[in-house]
Image (cartoon, rainbow, N blue to C red; front, side, top):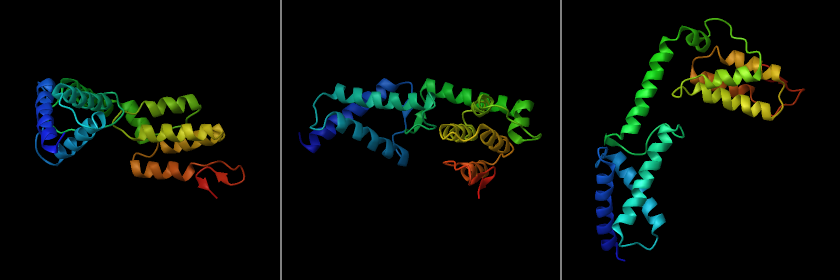
Amino acid sequence: MTQQEWNVIWHQALEQLQKRLLPAVLTPIGPEARLAGVCLSYAATKAFPHGTTDVAAVANVLYDYVKADVADVVEGRKSKSEFAWDKKPRVLEAHERNIRKEARQFDGSREQQRVLEGSKPAVVESIEEAYKIADSFPVFDPRGALLRNYIESQVKLDVPKKVILAIVSMALQETNVAQLRKLLNANATTYNPTSFVAGGRR
């Protein structure tokens, strides 16, 4: 198959893809559209390394790729779609509405604000409670993932619970993401009982 023949198949498959995505519409021009085109081209080339004259088969590969991308965003495996949209898929619009709703609920929750902003000292008394607090952060707030990753890594390394809980309690007073990451990194350890102290390594 020549490159010219493949180009014809490719453009016909893209047209079928746009029809299958309706009422959603991919943005056809611009840097994001070009990047999306590269991703789709890679998916098609991987599926048909020697080319194919089956336009519908190519369109199916492209559709499955876009569908998987949207599902990854909606199910929280990534924060943003690889594609730019003139009109987003309904499921993606619904997902973004839910995030905005969670943000409003979060902003209106005085108790959660107290914990996250550290208006009073937070003392975490168990690993289970620490996990619950980490998981209580809204999906758009990276602090929850930072806390959970810290807790999991330290538990796996058998760091004493009282040390983990002390650092988590300190971390809950920090609202700046960069400072929180710095604090947790400073206290993450492979744990040597003679060299570790709460607040960092000696």
